[in-house]
Amino acid sequence: MKKDKKAILISFVLGDGSITVDKRWGSNKAELGFCHSIHQAKYLEYKVKLLHSMVGGALPKIHSYLCKSNYGTFQQVRASKTHRYFMILRKWMYPNKYSIHILKHLTPHAIAIWYMDDGSIIANNRYKDGTCSSARTNIHLGTTAEIAKDVCNYFKERWDIKFTAYKEKGTYSIRCFHKEGEKFHKLIHPFIIDSMKYKQRFYYEHERIAPEMGDDIV
Image (tube, rainbow, N blue to C red; front, side, top):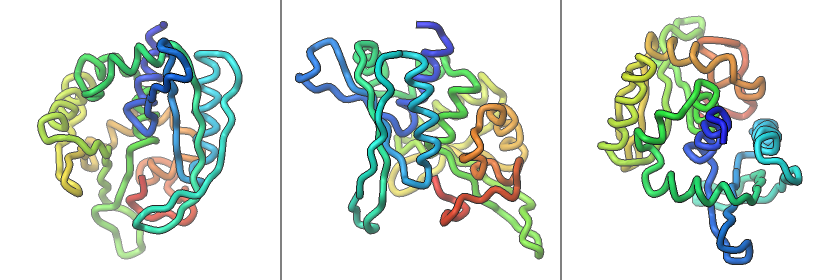
């Protein structure tokens, strides 16, 4: 598989995508599935079309359903695709999908997808008029401290962007602050689709705020 396509598929799994195996599909196939909030339905459509352009076959259908959790009931959208290459990808990326051997294949487009999946942005400081003077960019990993530091090292060594690891809800993620965030957002900006521009709102398209979403929504 060409390196650009491989990088995109990696980003799908780094983010909100997951690969599962079911014996009904045979021993040589696996399913890549995506699940997003209804607020990100247009983004899911974008990912489905991108996936279809790479692996062909039937265009995956998008299904809507209600998801119940401790935080309430939410409407979700989901799509999936079965392909033999996903079995190879699954064996390669699990159990540590954040390995440097995997991250080194990423392109700016792939990193943009990873960020649209798992990233968020929040204002550190605001002026009296409500505008932002400093922002913090997060990539939510939910992993160990050691692995989070490895991801930080990857960004510094490959892209010269300084991220730091931090603890949230018992696991570790990474973040960068305003000046480093400016470099990060410049890297991924050409690949951020319109419906996800709220995740860059303190650097680009400041007026774009997602409906019913706050400053730190993933």
